[in-house]
Structures are given as C-alpha cells and as structure tokens.
Length: 212
Image 1 (cartoon, rainbow, N blue to C red):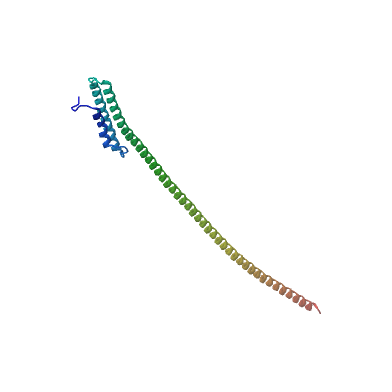
Image 2 (image 1 turned 90 degrees about the vertical axis):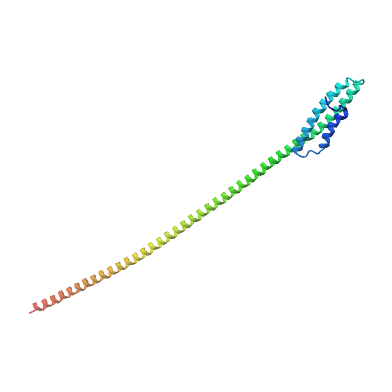
C-alpha cells in the first residue's frame, strides 16, 4: 500500500507531472523521446497499480460504483494523456529515423554521383590521353613516312645523278673510241693510198724500162 492516501487526484497528478516535464510538441531529440517514453511507461505502471489499489478500497465504501467510476475515469484520462506523449515520442523517433535514413540515402546517392562523376572524368581523361597518344603515333608515323619518302627521293636522285654521270662517261668513252677508230681508219686509208701510189709508180717505172 502507498504511504499517502490514494485518490483520483493523485492518479491524475502522476500524468500531470510527466506532462509538465514533456509538454506537447516538446520532443525534439532521440534522447528526449527515449526519456519521455521511459517516464510515460513508468508513470503508466504506477497509475495502473494505484488504480487497482483504489478500486479495492472502493469496495469498502458505501457508494462503491460511484467510487469505481471515478477511479476508472482518472486512470483512463491519465493513461490517455501518457499515451499521447508516447505517440508523440514514437512518431518523432520514427520520423527522425526516416529523416536520417533519407539523409543517409541521399548521402549515398550524392557519394555515388560524385564517384560516377569522378569515374566519368577519369574515363574522359583516359580517352583524351588515348586519342592524344593515337594522334602522336600517327604524327610520328607520318613523319617517318615523310623521312622515308625523302630518303627514297634522295636515293633516286643520287641514282639518277650516278646514272647520268655514267651515261655521260659512257658517251665520252664511245666518242673517244669512235675517234680512235676514225684515226685508225684514216691511217689505214692513208697507208692504202700510199701503197696504191707506190704500186702505180712502180708500174710506171716498169713500163718505162720495158720500152726500147
């Protein structure tokens, strides 16, 4: 039994004290919500036990039913008031968890977007570097081809120069051979004429000798 006499007013006072600590819309944090739930549950247990004790006492009174009705009303009103606080605290925790979950999901979305953007930038950078390497390789190949063409042209020019020089030399050699041949032919012709002239002279001398 309680030290102080239990009355309906004392029962209502249990809920009123909790309401003074946690007035409506005063739950603004997880810690305060947990404290409100703990206070409400503790007060609810006290109210139920006090109501039970007071109902037992009502049977000893003359107006039993009236006493019981008053006790039940005080218990019902007090528990309703505490239940309202519990609902507020539970709703706050649920809404706060939802808000935190949404924030966490949004954080993950933002993180994923940042990572995707970073990957996209890295991919684009690699693509640019790949294109630059390809262009550099093409420029180097073009330069190699150009140098090869220049070397081939120079070699062809050198071959043409050598061929022209060889042709000139061959032409000179043919001309010199022709001049040598011509001189030899002239010598032979001269010798032939001399020989013929000597033969004619000899014949003339032979004719003169044969005359009486």
